[in-house]
Length: 119
Image (cartoon, rainbow, N blue to C red; front, side, top):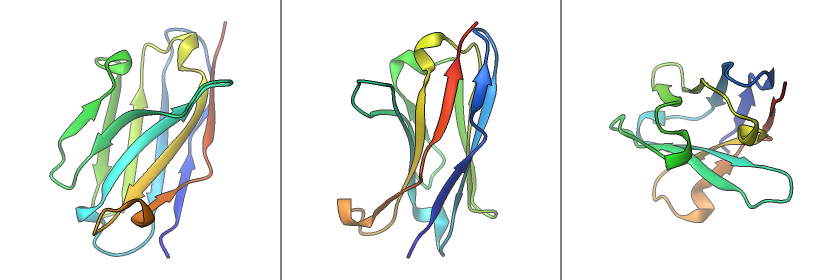
């Protein structure tokens, strides 16, 4: 069973920065597709960024240039560096790890970490 644990959420002012971390248990992490999602109050969960094992990252347009996703395949860690934060970034952020054969049943979620951006 793969376990996914997020950390690093909190409070930031507009224009500020926060760094989220995600620890993923299990072997062969380097071939996992790892994603960050977020869910704001009253809204559907949305994909923020996704990274394949090759290190390529794709971002939703609203965070491009402000958020940077990275991964450490030795430590089984994923990070989301968030800068130039806006109030609309306020949400619960979730880490998702999907291993082979990459079906929905092979996806594991963390418990989420709250990010609040407010002046």
